[in-house]
Length: 533
Image (cartoon, rainbow, N blue to C red):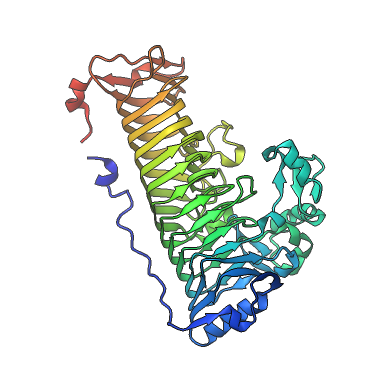
């Protein structure tokens, strides 16, 4: 029996999130003086409508068709903010409209500009309807030259500022200076908002930030053009996200789609993402801040989503210091994401990622890895340092079941790079079908099983192993004529078993330091006496 099922390590049935309910009372922002002409600033009118609805026991605040210019919208408990089809909520491009507040971003407690839509310590809150919320992110975001054509770069740099290297454009000079100021203040542990004032232009808001909220519903709207991350629930419970569209330019700096951060009981379904960074991402704090908070992201279900552009279609990390567990993603389609399934961390993070089930994922046109694990994210994934002492700062990834994956084209099928002191372990790949230029690369992994895996690399071996143990390979498709089946290196490589079709030859090359007797090949007729119970 599969160890994951036998030991109960795959995610169990998820508790469905509780959904909010609202009184039937209706309020229109028009009744509070809002004007949808795209010119009138409606911050006071919108927030007065929300405050009145809240003070009278809650209900629905309607945004009718129109172009509604506004500063930050501050949500309240018991409020359903309903943007009707034809409504465009366009957020102010004036940085001074966004007060500085203490919050969490990129896994640490810090100070940022208030998000376009913000709420904290709320119960029963929703954003619904077919309207559009536009964060005016192009007014805030820096842009890397490498992501522009020469003509685009020339047009962009006709205004704003570039850094001394001329490799990054910034909207204001204060934004450039603010980067170093904010970095210094964060390193010093400063959380007083007034200390960050001179860095305001750098402290880009998220489009939606919900802190410590319970029973949250996002159903229907389009969220687009965020100054940094788009949707960021932090320390929230009972979150339902469905039928939403999340859009950012492909070049948008930190243009993540959805970042679920130390949340519990979440269901994401039937939504679309087309963004500039990671699309659907699971996080739980960074380094000491994340470990001290110690709140995992757990009991998460994601299904029926489509991702177009993004650095990763589904991502865990790299900020995962509080842990991630009991997550499932199924029946999703990734079209042209840089990587498909992306799992990343680094020394210093700590935290455990475990009990992850991924099934029925289809991908096409993936320019990097279809599936990637890297424990060297902050080092660019290329360092090969010696083993270090295992401490609370050592991250661990284990107990994944990845099954029924199809990818029509990728640069590499699967890449896994663990830490020598903490190998990635107990990962099952079943029913995998990937067309890729390169095959499967494993380094510092333990107890990884491949069953019914079809990968046909254009170049290199099907499997490349370095310092791996407990690898089980059964019923894999052979590479083309003249190609290696496996290349194995590292003195620690041991306990490798290959089982396949009787009569087929498997060409395996071993480095001098690798004990070739540790690689065992069994024809099909010998399976019964060698299979694990």
